[in-house]
Length: 289
Image (tube, rainbow, N blue to C red):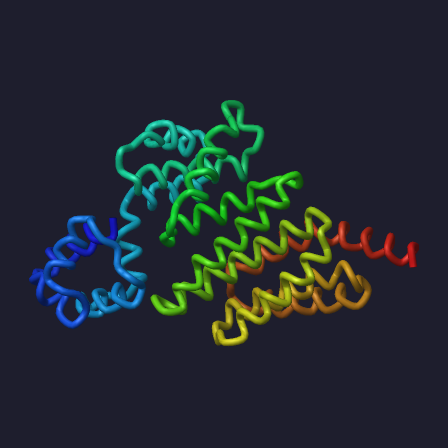
């Protein structure tokens, strides 16, 4: 799939094969790559992108196409009937990318409307099996896997842990391809994973995952991601020391309201979901001790 996309980009730019493969791979190997007969290593793929003079993010944007944009638009508008219809119309598409866009639409309906009247978990099991059997994931499959992770129930703890580690492994290659994508996607993964663990009352795993999250972001200087980490750190610690961290997270939210960001409202919704739960957990632990 990557080879055919590289070929399309090359032609749109008016470049010859030689201009793209020079210094990276041989002529015959590149011809086979464009024809879909070979994959390339991450390092060589970066070399091809450099010869095309595009970033990995630009490649991803080109790869995602209009179907993915349609799914995002329907979701933002809350048109879940239309999302489900998109899934039905495209779930059997012979094009893998379109089929994945259909799966994406399905998972968005599952996450936000679990009692959707035509809902079945059969497609969910098919998605999980397809991801598990794939030898390598692209960014699109990573995003799907993160939605799958959010959809797993309390009875799927083992599967959730396995999926979380697989996503981390697949994201590791983006440190070479595009470190910005790596930190953004990894931070989003940890942020969602921590919320799930808190909801499931798995506080021990939440504490361990938070430490890994902090370690992962140590090399990042992205202010948005560091603010996100600050919020989730306060949220996790709210369960262990409610009186102290209630004050800290309230101060954090006051600071966020002074910064023009769309995330402030999002953080407040998450805080409202956890505040009473964290208070009750803390009080129970105090009685036991």
